[in-house]
Length: 159
Image (cartoon, rainbow, N blue to C red; front, side, top):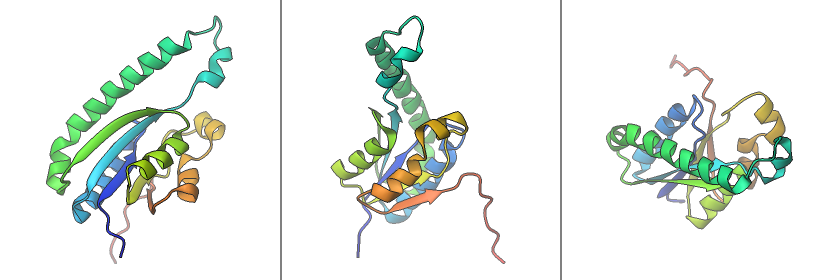
């Protein structure tokens, strides 16, 4: 039997991130597993020509990383009690940069994650069309099982 000791949960700070983190905490608490939350900043080098006048990409990256780390710290601080109440023994967070799906998959592999818990939807509209479905890419290529959660789905009633 496959033991679940480390769970990875990618978040995107969208309105759905809290729901996904809550579900991940429940699963981690159930298995007494460590919970790793990551946020991935998309690689923007390919889009530097979109800006007129051109943007200094190294400064933009540094500012984005700093801002994302501050958001992650706040996100984690706001959920300390929730994670502890769920029985999560240890939490860790990290901000990464690159292709979102690839970074999730690489992180899961390099940190020996046993399960990925992630949302089926984050941001919508143009970003989804432009970047494709991250969840779909992760499900197809992950080195471990992936539990996807549709944050728009109403909870089923037991009948």
